[in-house]
Length: 474
Image (cartoon, rainbow, N blue to C red; front, side, top):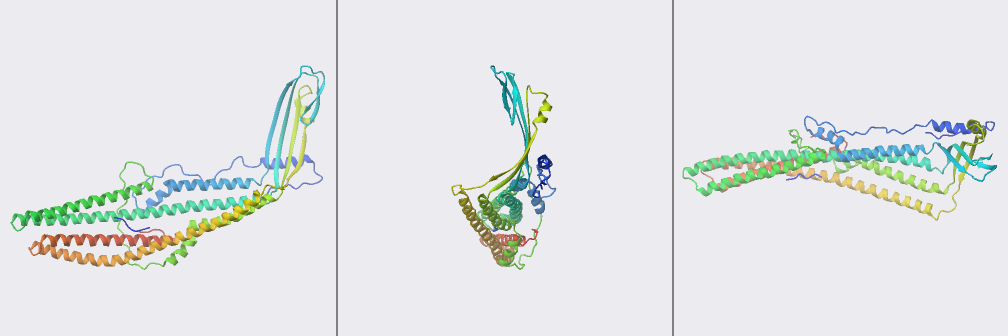
């Protein structure tokens, strides 16, 4: 039994009349104003959401969006993408590092000698010497061929793609939950129909036993009705097993792992099974503008263009502005603070790196980035094709179910009327056991086909509306 459903650029302006010390202090001061750490914009959920009082379709979907592992992993990936964006932006800012080195030495035959300590030449007559070097350096990118700028744009796109991927996973979970939810409703109604068939068989058995006691029927006739009753009871057990399997699947999808009995809220679907269906192209064109997986595919195309620009940047020179300060001291040369003051020096400079030959790596990286663009384009086409097929399948299933429902409903009405007449005639002794059991079997089959067509149409029609941006409402 199954339903068919498928920091803005930092810069320093140097006045020629200013001292080098002012340049150094400006760079270092600006760098020291940076945040000590990057904090994520959102706080990830680490606790399990409370269970609702009643497992309606909407409460199931809301619970899964907070607890489903796949959804939560995609949310983590989105947070990670935001941190990558923050790191990319940090590439435009100065970097500051402090360093110190301490050294002791022993020269057993030394008298008086000159010792180089850092950038200072000092004299000492001690066999034991101790020296220290202290530095603070800042470096700031000036030009890198646009690599940093494009890396920021790339990280921004990756962040959007991560968010869209998280949204797509939630939509998929919502679709899966709806499918299982309707399967459970259908299975429940099937079990109810089984109970009705059992009652009919029990009534028939009581009549047959009465006929047997009156000598009107043989024991074989009683056994035939008992066999049908046993068959009806077995069918109910089988349908209850299917129902429990669907409950278990939904429970697993909701990430519920306790031993409590799980069941959805009792509800009845009374939608218009024969409502007009939208055309596949209408649903598809609307979905193209709404579905996050399509938007993510388009962003991937933009990302590949940036990959080409970043690869080309390796052909351009890079320029960095460096500045810092340095101080040294050495034992036997006076007070520590005096030495540090006298040996204090500042520096500022520019470093330029010019690429000349890299063995063709840059050329290959550019070619690879262009190939990736073609791959992203093909991925987008594949996603669009999958979307069309999904929508087309939903519509075809809904349309076919409508046709089956009309025929099944008419057949069920005829089967019920026929069985009621046959049952009455059997009570009067005008029909035999075979005619009675055949009429009952035909009624059960007709009712089952009508239920299947009803739930298949309602589910697929709801999915068509869902792909057009409507909230699932059953």
